[in-house]
Structure formats: C-alpha cells, structure tokens
Length: 168
Image (cartoon, rainbow, N blue to C red):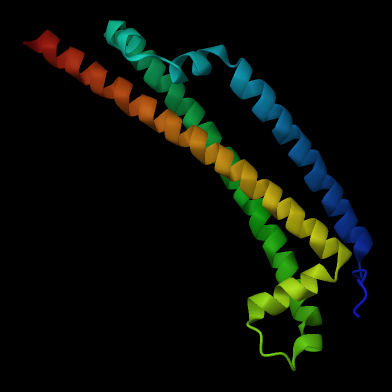
C-alpha cells in the first residue's frame, strides 16, 4: 500500500494555504452580509412585475445603474475565485507531474493518474478541497449574476418602453 507523502516545501504551501483560508472566510462574510444587507440591491432583485411597471423613468435608470454596478462587483469576485482555482490546479499539476512516475506502468489516462497522486498527498487533498470550495463560490456568483442580468434587462426594457410612450 502507498503511504501519503508530505510535500517538500510544505511550509511555503501551508503559508499560502492560510492566506486562502483567510480569503475564503472574508468571502463567506461578504456573501452572508453584503448581499443580504445591501437593501437597495436586494430590493431591485426582488421586484415584482407590478412594482416594476409602477416605477418612473428616473427610478428605472437608478435601478439599472445600481444593478449594473453590483454586477461588475460580482464579476470581479468571480474572476478572483477563478484565479484561485487556476492557481490551485497549477499546483496540483506540479505535484502530479513530480509524482506521476510511480504510475508509469499503469495504462490509466493522465487525469486518473493525477487523482491517484492527489489522493496520496495530504497537501494536494487540501488544495483539491479548496478548489471545490472556490468553484462553489463561483457557482453562487454565476446565479447572482444571472439574476442581476435578468432584472437589468427587464428594467431596461420597461424604461425604453416608457420613453417611447412619452415621445408619442
């Protein structure tokens, strides 16, 4: 049986690991606090059809601008987590390449060998778990982004319809 290997330079990775943990905790606080307590954005993301129709052109423009600004922020957060996932995957690939020779007699594809290496390395397992966590954050951000886009487009359509009616 294979024993789990400790990665050389573990201190360097442990330091980076602690930085990632801190960033994840900040992000969790962001999700729980900012999105739920940002009353203005929450209000616009929960408008019903009648309320949207009752808004005047200026209110619609303000809502669109607020949602657009928040959408940019959400995209920045998504990109941040994508960079972390990419960094983790690069590290996992380096670990895999370093250790993959022990599976040279196996006819498994590279990704299967990569997972075997990861499974036998304590730090790699932690990196993989962190990657999954950040991908979850990215999924959450995508859903928020889609909702922002939907409401922005709906409000924009209403605004242009009201402007068109004023010109008639």
